[in-house]
Each structure stands twice: as C-alpha cells, then as structure tokens.
Length: 167
Image (tube, one colour):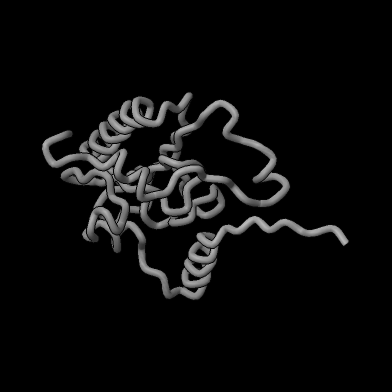
C-alpha cells in the first residue's frame, strides 16, 4: 500500500470557523472590530485620519494588504474624495515599500463589490493589494486546493508596519 502524504494547513480551520460564524449571523464586521485593536494583534500596518491598512490574515500571497475606511461604508460610491485620496496614497506607499522590501515583480490591486463579485465582507468596502512574483503560481492551488504562503504574518507585519514618524 502506498503511503499517503498529508499537507497540513491548520490556519484553514480559523477561516472555516469564521465562515460558519458569518453564515449563522454571529459575525460582526472585521473592519469595524479591528480598527481599534492593538496594531500587532490585528496586523494593522498603518493608520490614517480616515482609513487604515492591515494584513489579510487569509492571504493569497505574503504581503497581501487590505485598505479600509474607518467608517462602515458598503460601496466605493459611499467614499468621499478624501477617503479615496488617503486610501490610494496608502496603497501607493505600500506598493513602493513592498517592492523594496519583498522584491516582488508586480501587484494585483482590486476591490470586490457585492457577494457575487467575490466579496467576503460585502458591507464594508475595502481594497486588496496583492504582491506577485514570477512563478508564484504552481500546481498546489489546482491539485491540492491549497496555497503555499512562504512567510508568516508576524514577519510580514514587522517588515511593513509604518513607524509613527513615517507617512
């Protein structure tokens, strides 16, 4: 009998449990819940006047950031010019920082509006910035339904956390 190899992904259980809470209606808004949390515990890397940036705890790639307004707003149409300017200023700054520190080859930048578009949190608008490297896709997501993320959230947070005197 051939020995079966297991690929352990214990972080997936937290994701599964969070989805169960969301489906049962128990879950609050992750963006409203985390905005006042301890930066390190919540993986918040920058705070502005109207918005903030945090690491995605279920990342597509290491360095996957989420940018959200403090206000509980559901759509980009609800964002003021000041919200948009601050969020895109943060995105621009983190693109430069990630390119320098993580040596990525490109980025995906996006926002999913509504459940049918893939929004995991559909009632609090947020933007995704995902670093990409040549060759970062392989057989794992296709054959094993698993994505290998080569860096811990703690290490990534240390690399990207904005210092108080930096913009």
